[in-house]
Image (cartoon, rainbow, N blue to C red):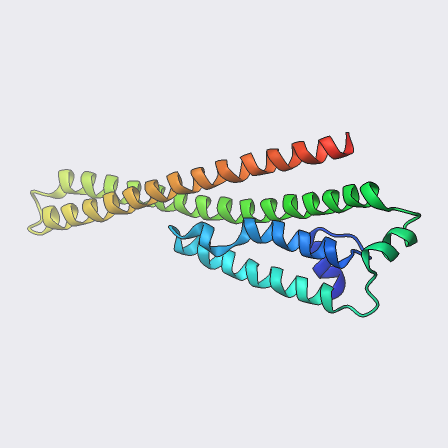
Length: 191
C-alpha cells in the first residue's frame, strides 16, 4: 500500500500528523476489529482482512520520512494551533471513522444479499420438492422420499439464511447508529 492509498483508506489528508494517524487508527480499529463479528465467520474473516489493511495503512503513514509533528503541521497550514488544530484532528478522525463505517457496511450488505439469495433458493427447493412429491409421488417409487429429503434441505437452507439475515440486519442497525452519531459529531464541529 502506498502513501496516498493509505491516506484514502484512513480518511486522512496529505500531511497528517502522527497524532492524527494514531487517532484515525484507534477510531477505525474500534469499527473494524474482528472480535466485533465473533458470531459470523464470514464477516469476521472480512473484518480480519480489513483490519490487516488498516495496520498496513497506519504503518505506511507512520514510517513516511519527513512527517511533520503536530506543531510544524499546524504552522505549515497557516497557524493551526491549540483548539483549532484539535478541531482539525477531530474532523479528520471523524472522517476516517465515517469511511470505516461505510466500508464495514458495504461488506455486511454484500453478505446480507448472499443470505437473501440463499433464502430464495431454499424456499424454491422446498416448494419444488413439495410440488413434485404431490404430483408424481404416487407414480414413482422413490419420488416421495426424495421429495421429503429435498423439502428438508430447502427448509434448512431457508432457516439458516433467515437467521443470517437477522444477524446482518442487527449489524447494519449498529453501523447506521454509529454513522449517525459520527455525522452528528462532525456537524457539531463544523457547525
